[in-house]
Amino acid sequence: MMLGNQPQPKDIEVTAPPADGISDLAFSKTSDLLAATSWNNEVRIWEIMGDGSSTAKAMYNHDAPALCCQWSPDGGKLASGGADNAGKLFDVTTGQATQFAKHDAPIKSLRWIDGANIVATGSWDKTIKYWDLRSSSPVSSVALNDRLYSMDAHGPLLVAATADRNISMFDMSNPTVPFRTMDSPLKLQTRVVSCFTTGGGFAVGSIEGRVAIQYTDIKDNQGNFSFKCHREGAPAARDSTVFAVNAISFHPVFGTFATAGSDGGITFWDKDSKQKLKVFTKKAGPIPAATFNRTGTIYAYAVSYDWSKGHSGASPDLKNSIMLCPVLESDIKPRKKV
Image (cartoon, rainbow, N blue to C red; front, side, top):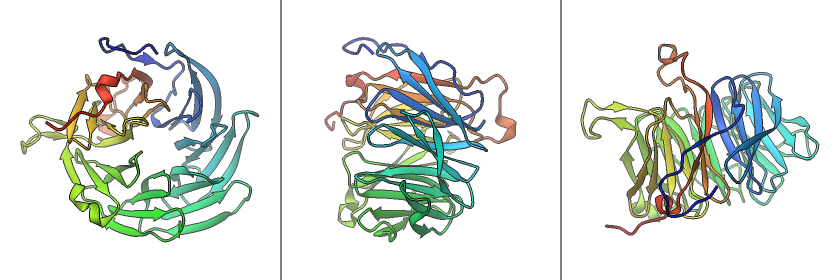
């Protein structure tokens, strides 16, 4: 995509999107491949061209809704998890998908562990399992207090958030014992956790239209804070309408971040200067998933119903789509404190 000092370019729609709700998006770390999981059991892969156009490259299926996906560090494989309790591995070279993981309940999140041939899978069966892809059995397992709702990893840090609002932090040098556990700083259900690309902390998003910035080392607690977002009406007003924060994505170059929510809103933020960098025009429906590409020049987001308002909130007219937003450096670059 051509970027520079110019007005915000129009978002570009990805061709042949899933026909059902979109649950996760993931860009390759080494190429321009984009993957999506959806509630009709599908995992789809596209190649994104330099002009923002897209070409469908592959598709495979789980036996129940596909809930999560992430690319291997070398970009050669895609791991996905689903409500069939299975983890699958797609090989880009062979075009084949094979099962590598099994849980007793749906796999809600998974992450490749940096520097190793290991995938961590987190499940509603209240466990995290670590899988060496050369073996059919997990190399280790962690018992959680409740169902895993969100998980992220960066470098040696893995953060897991569960249904009881507990957050566990693991150092991958000792991956089965958390070095710190805490209750979420947010009062209501956790929707997403996302690790800083600079290390040392993570962000938490909840159903109450709030985000918390949290450092892992207790000595850095003075840097912790939370803020309101994804609300309609004055944020401080008691009658403001509150929406879930579904996605928090850190920029791979600048370390700033984007939030996306059930209100169809997208906002870019700078956590260090505590500033809002850019607010985008709201989209036609909720945004259940979003991610930056490896260079941070594209922000991909899905528009589809996230069931945040139950069956009554579902609109038959809402089209499932995946959009590519060109990212202008001026919109995402950190700003000095004012």
